[in-house]
Length: 300
Image (cartoon, rainbow, N blue to C red):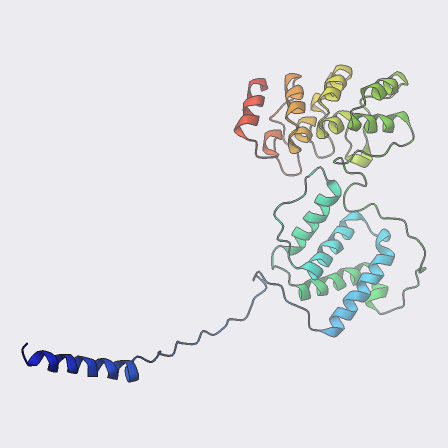
């Protein structure tokens, strides 16, 4: 073996030893300066001002004792700010069904309070206090609350309708209200008896978005009831509630395909748009190809 080979190997070993002992130490990484968080970041701040938190709690207690003195719009504004202060901005994209009027109104209020500048918890508390102070100057001035304490208060009728069309209302006095209840339950015999007792199949119900019994039956998937109601009141097939929603809107919002088929076969117009979100019945939910195949042959 040539003499230069061992010498070369020795030189290589020495060089590697020097490299690993002195030159291969981990180089320091450049430090990354954390940027201050803005109101638009995903995380919400935690209020640190004890005085602000105390005043917010006082405003909450005051509002709870006076909420029935203001209209629904103010109640919803205060609710939205309260949710932002408590839970942060609204990140729930799976909004409640529009037929769940109470839940939808509260979700929408939280969304509205979260928009624009992206309210943090601290800012939401500040705005909550401002709204309560603007509605009740006595609170803003620090005057004591003279409202009676400890007495049961009448539940305010804000945050949407008192009775959601997603839940069948309890029977009320009067054959018309019984008709709405029976239609939601799909009780054909009861509905027939009520009509014989002079109940009006075209009766509007202001406490449930000015719907008629056909809206209720469609939203609950009572296809037999829908068919019967159309026989008694065919003009109701495109009846509009207070948001311009037809029974077909109600049926497809809750994916009641059989009810939608009955309505379409009796002349329901699938091109009518409701005024809340400017949607046609077919735009209420994303229908599957199979569902569309069941509906398309019935469309005008």
